[in-house]
Length: 230
Image (cartoon, rainbow, N blue to C red):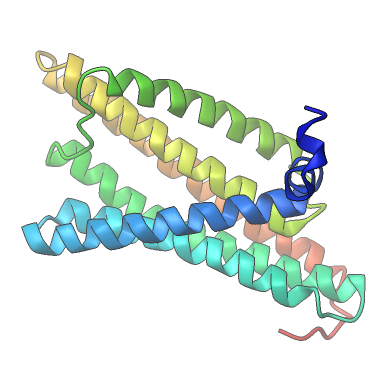
């Protein structure tokens, strides 16, 4: 580990939460844009409502990550810490509204998974590898949400909640794939489990978005005497 600290940007990534979050946002943004573009193109080519819906989901993720990166850059030019915090809280609240929008696309994905039996088909051992990744990713997302529960830095808090939402959706798609693989003889049970867990995913995302908006508004009221830019 000490050897890694010799490298400037590696050390900064390991010790600076803001730089680490910005780096992860940039990497995720690039992957989300690529996924949205590819799935939308394939959806149009094959006339697949499923792929188009998934592409809209990735577009919403891209919009949120781009919003956070752009507003974090602009907030550095504000005059005082209070002005910066108010600006950042507005970004945090905007992400809450975008999570609500994303939740609509997730709902569309869930309905198609249940009604039309759409979803991801992971071949062979890939299902198990994706499963391990999804569970580890979800556990890490929960840890980060808990760690940044208080909005010390709105950009970091919003990014961690965004990561939690993507981890939750990934876990749900993994469940639908596993049930499709191993529950062919129990169609009614498969639909019931997917319906119940899908409703839970929708409720969790809706509640998270609502709490983001409410908490941002509460803190912004304490800074209402300010007149920030943006």
